[in-house]
Structures are given as structure tokens and as C-alpha cells.
Image (cartoon, rainbow, N blue to C red; front, side, top):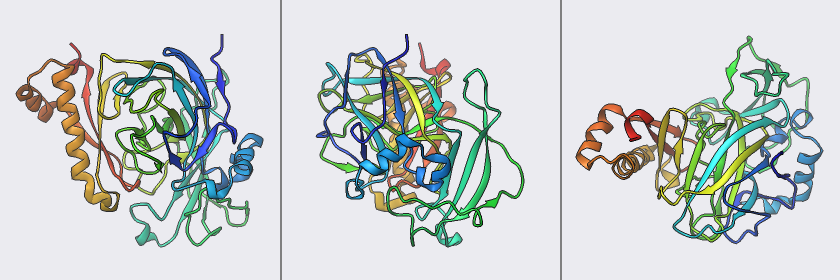
Length: 352
């Protein structure tokens, strides 16, 4: 029996913000499995390749003034019946399927080296070695690139670059990038009022960790009745750092299971992959940019120490020693204003 499907439409999507007041478009029981259509807000970078009838309907059905103050298209919110503030929402990511075999990378004005390059540039990628059995392809190749000229700056959500074959330049040589499908944005309704979709936080949102892919489990603290779960910002691939500003932004269909895990309280997103546990930390002030990395690293490390005590059964002294010899601190992204870091520890050390 196939999982129920939440189709992305103007009525089931919201654009650019996170808000607990946003009405739910679907209600599920804990333990339910659903398939959700996640649509990239970069579909306009190559509308001839990235926009189908359903994506076009979202562009036509959500007015530009409603796409604020952030940029991402979210599908949801989804109510998880029985979820209460203080609970932990568990999200098991079961599978992901490409909506179409193309994605876009934008070297944007918010990228790490925009001032040095002095321009913005779009590169379109194509999935290769397509699996006839329906499995996700293992790699993507750049097809062509072009300088972004539709606007002075790429700062309007949903901007469309009209296809211009004369501007599209072939990549200098063939190369294949390992595909790591994942959701850049996923989480619960934030504690306060409406916020931009761009900075991540303890509610999740735009965490941009490429490990949020098939087979992973993510835990979130719940701040509102029903949790207010959503997905968005789907990617084919991304590196730690996301330094030019974006990943390979591409629409995905995501099958996942939502449940409550009250035996594992969390204060920020907690990720479990098939080999590691990962905690997350975020800088406090979006204006700091990369100068906030120290704050983000400290938060990720502190969250890991707490996990090692609460779940691993270690004393704090023991956890602190193990952290220095067995935990890997990494940079998740440096381009979302609020920068993010993660700390990883192997199951073999943490699990009893």
C-alpha cells in the first residue's frame, strides 16, 4: 500500500516564512507515513528544465508580495495529532525521488566570495546514470552555466531567467558530482511569531545539512500543539559549507514517517544516520556571518556533551575527554546569515 501523498500546490505551500499561525493542510497520527512534494524556489533558473505544470501553478498562485521575508517554498504545515510543547518529533526519512532530472546551483550575492567574483552565476546540473529500477542516480554532471542578468541582484524570490541558448556556456570538461539527496529545510513551527525561512534555529528550518537524506532520522523539539511540520529547499547535492550560496537545488518527492519520541528530549535538531549521531549549533546574530562560527561550534559541542551524558550514560568529565578524541566538529553552512555547525559521534561510542 502506497503512502498518502501531499501534493505541492498554492493551497498546500507557503513561501519565505515560518509561522505557527499558518493553518495545517494535513493532519496525521503519530507513526503515519506520507509522501510530500518538495519544490525548489530555484525552478526559475532554467524554467524549460525545472518547471512543470505543477511548479508553474505555485508560481502563478502565490503572489510575489506573499513570498517574504525569506525565499524558500515550504509544503505544509502538517499537524501531528497529540504533539504537545515539550515533546520530541521524530522524522524518519525513508526515500527521495527526483521530480525531474535537473537542478540549479547559484553562485549568489550571499555566497562567501561574491565580492571577489563580482557577479552571480547559474550552473545547471543533470542527473546521470539513471536507474531503470527507480533508484536514485548516484551522480550529477554540470550541463551549462550563465551569468545571472535577470535582475541587478538575485534577491527576489521566484525570479525567472528566460532561457537564452546563446548565454548558456558548456562546462569546461566533463565531471560527475556524487549525489546526496536531502532536504535543506525541514522542521517544526518556531516558538515565536513569523520569521524568515533563511536563518536556521533550534526549530530546524534551513539547517542545510546534506546528511538529512534517505535513511536518516531527525529529532526536533516541539513548541506548539500539533508540531507544525514542513519540508522545503530540496537538494540533489551539497558540500559542507555551501560556500557559493546554494546547493544543487532540485525538486524532490520525499517519503517520511512522523512520530513522537518522548524518551529522547532535545533542545535543537538531533540527527541519526546509519553510522553517527549529529548535534547542531547556530550563531546567534545573523549579521555576524562567518564570524559567528565560534558560537555555532560551541553550541554544537555543548549539545553533544549533553547527549553523551543523557543518552550515553557518561559523566560530564568522561564526555569531555571523549569529545576531544572522538567527536568531529564540522561546518554545516556559512551562507544563511545564521551560520551552522555540527558535531558527530559514532554509534559505537554513544550507544549503550
